[in-house]
Length: 323
Image (cartoon, rainbow, N blue to C red):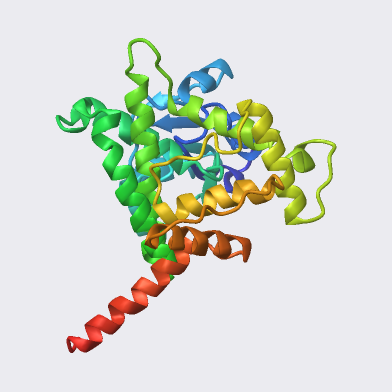
């Protein structure tokens, strides 16, 4: 080998990985870079990829190297070094390499930032589960909460989400969806501690996944659905089969707002083709019931309609007050 070949630049690869991806699931370019490297370094002795690298016969140095050390190593003999980092990278090392490259006085090896793995959609949900686990163990307040303690928050957060939807506030919508999601994860984490009937957030997700697949035979099965009405028919039929209900009123929660309750009952009656007259009676309650049934038949959600009217009424009140 001649002198010019010996002094030719080598290669430094900063290989980033995500803790949200199962260890060992690296891209093919990442495995190629690791196998071809003359030196592989990782500052984190507990990095989740290390057992899989050892299994693949790749030696990894536990420790750090300065930018100067890596540049000298790689520019002597066209050698390559791979530094295994987190997705956030190694700021001290990258800053040092940037300074050397920017000086204009260095023979620099090729520098490459190589993503070893990518987050899948929904990967941040894993972060939420991990954070909730830690809070449940370490926080004196969260650690003793029960389902009953949190029940009111689920209702409050749902109403705040509804308000964000009605006002069209996209930033608030994103935040309130997160608050509702927290309630789900929190309840699932509490359930995980139950000594008799424990279940986890994975069990919760598994139930809804199975339910969605079963109730969409036109997507995951052999049936067809050309219209939203066809989809609804599939949904209601499979739901009835799952629940084994005898009455269309079964499963309608009586604790929901009264207009929503009236509309839900009317919807069940209409979807089943039942001929049930609205009860006649004296008083505003029966009048409201009739209005709710009429609204549902016309395709209007009475709860939403009344909330919109009430919002307009509130604005008129504020205007009268001079706001």
